[in-house]
Image 1 (cartoon, rainbow, N blue to C red):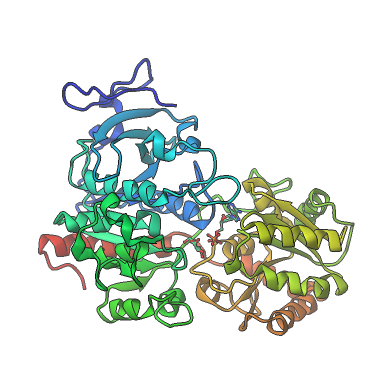
Image 2: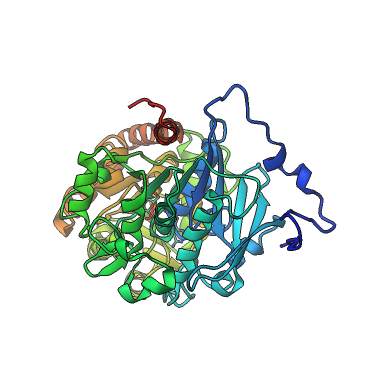
Length: 519
Ligand code: ADP
Ligand code: GLC
């Protein structure tokens, strides 16, 4: 709900009409810079998803969790497009700024939304670009919006405008942290304008690149000198992702193993050479994601029956609920879960190929997710092939996802690549052991034979060998429960990520100011 409008006559200010707050009550004007945190920085997160409001996968989870996890150290605020899911949320939005257009990018307004726990969101309001029914990236039929390059260039430019204080929102970041290709042009516009504000670009998924034709240059206001190998040119096209990497002060990705993998031809998506040289220059590092405190099986209000480590009867109540939800027969065999975007990355064709092995060995599968139409169709067909043993729900909701992690014995995650992966951590925390490919963040967060089962090759025999081990463990409750205990106690949290990010922020800001930071 937008409750205020911009005074376009005088200085830009928030003018809530009948709202509970006025500008002076808003934390950005009153929040004192803590004297105990002399290094406290103002950081602008630029992202296309935020789990509180709208998400299609893990990017939304991370964009929501990391600013909160860093709040005690830095003043992190989030810039996100004003999609209907954002504007129609219960949180009032105060218009606080206005930005002019550039090339074919239309003018827009900046609204401020304060979430209940104090997280400040800057909402980019531009009805012609963002107020459409669908996901952040496309219509409900799965097709991407044809003007995504304009939509997300506008997001990047808005970040650059805020960093240049053009929005006059009384808050100017010391550092801009942009996430994935939709935010890739933020560091680029800042660089082209000669901004001295440092930028960090985080790759959550190298395979989604935001590649458009060179003919879009004039629409996006891209200077000619950007069309080179060191710039955003990518095989004769423009790449938003490459722009983010080329023009940021530093690049991170979301696990140590993926940071190394993407410098190889197998995982580099055509950018391995570019990334290898960034690594050599010390400009690419891996910082793992964590999971937030809501992932606690004994208190999670989404669960039909919250349970503690060791309460396996309690876990069985959740399993019964999942079986019921997915129309599965009663069974004493293992319950496997798939909670996933239904896309090639996630290796669902492999799960399709091992499904008969699982069912013939006495297992059942519950699948939830949505994604590419062919993958959705393949999952529906599986349920038809194995009625009562495999159940599928096309769609996604957080409650069912959490109940599936709690109710299942094993999570299937045969990803072809996995930058970090959150689902395998959520599953472990709820006592479901992942059966996963030994790649990226899966390799870094699953201890083979201790908290889950890893397999090396994206092949049916390799996958089935891991599944056989899972079935063997299931047959020995003592062993199964010991593994569950280890998985549930695994130390996944944001602390391990906050420290390296905070250190990086400080180094990047110090470098810009010419102060020698820690190297
Ligand atoms: P990815 O980001 O590649 O999908 P992650 O494991 O990092 O993989 O994150 C998955 C997150 O997205 C989890 O919170 C999961 O519950 C959620 N999720 C899975 N499938 C969908 C979907 N189809 N739509 C929205 N969220 C989903
Ligand atoms: C991407 C990746 C996933 C990662 C998530 C959050 O969607 O596919 O592995 O966990 O981003 O960083």
